[in-house]
Amino acid sequence: MICASIAEKDVEKCIESLDKVEMAEIRIDLAEFSNEEIRKVFSRRKKTIATCRPGKIMEEERVEMLKIAIESGATYVDIEYEASPEYMNDIIDFAHRHQCDVIISYHNYNRTPELDELEEIVRNCYAQGADLAKIATHVNVNRDNSKILSLYKDPGRLVSIGMGDLGRISRIVAPFLGAEFTYAALNEGEATAPGQISYEKLNQFILDIQQI
Image (cartoon, rainbow, N blue to C red; front, side):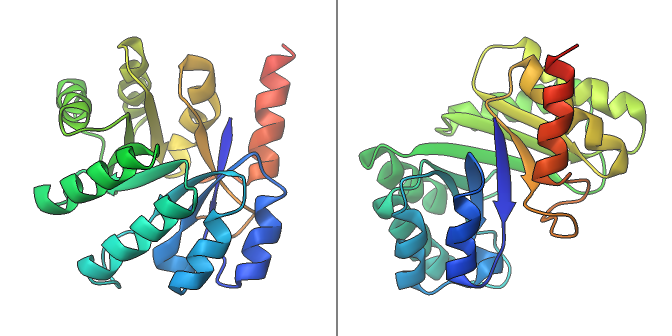
């Protein structure tokens, strides 16, 4: 399954985009939606991830926005690996009370740690309450892809992908190794992370591989 990462600021265009994909991550922090717009987007009967990265929005407001998304029907909520225990536990408890799965995500925009460190991070994600662990690290050399993809050998719900141009191959093959889904940009030029492939192109790559 392919998850399109959407950062569209126009709520009606965002909803139109949802109808074109099988699954979507809504980047609430980039879309800058109001609480009512969040309700409108996540109340659509669509498989969605609610994501609100730290930075521009205060933590208290992020909690409120994510809870609104969860109440409105988000399938998953994404929590950063580095989040405080108070923030993390609050969202996890709320999500599980509303039958929403929790993704705990680790991002490293500079490098890919060694395999044993990545394995420990995945274990920590589950220990902290994740239903699904997400690993996204920058690929500087091809060997980094091997480390990222090696994580699929262990049991557990996982999405492990590489960022950057060299990491593109990991996004294509991840579903064949056991990833619950893989991430794509909605359209060319609309990537929300380095190395994202457009939804249409990634879908074609996957179809081509399936026919081999």
